[in-house]
Length: 132
Image 1 (cartoon, rainbow, N blue to C red):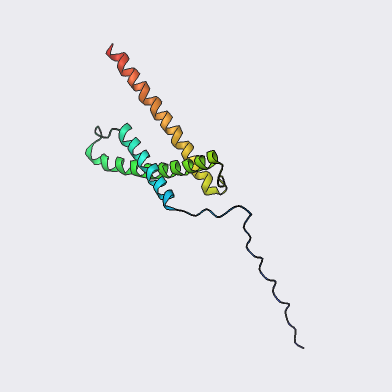
Image 2: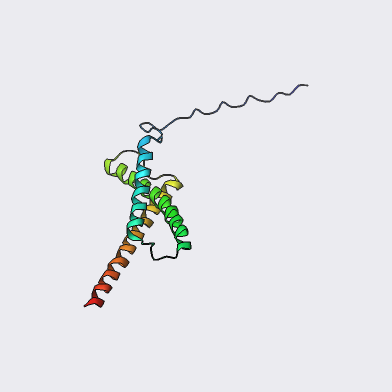
């Protein structure tokens, strides 16, 4: 008495939605990331003066700037890519959790920029008021 198992069902073919191609990384994405990181690092260098720190703290402060520059630069590039796609009406919007992290990181960067700008403006106004 030989019992045989029924044949395994054939796997379903992978079907892509009509009109949508998978988005692949290209050199333009690398250039956008580089531009985003460079912009954030340039902003940090312009706004934050490290000359008043003790010499033993300067390396740590620069490494902190590098870390935040890489994180915020990546978020800025991702947010810029999504805004560009949305404005042109091409490609999918944020659909994966990582996509939303990039967008929220970009929002965090904008929040930090406006906060630092307000603090810098208030300190300039305070210095001008003291000199009068």
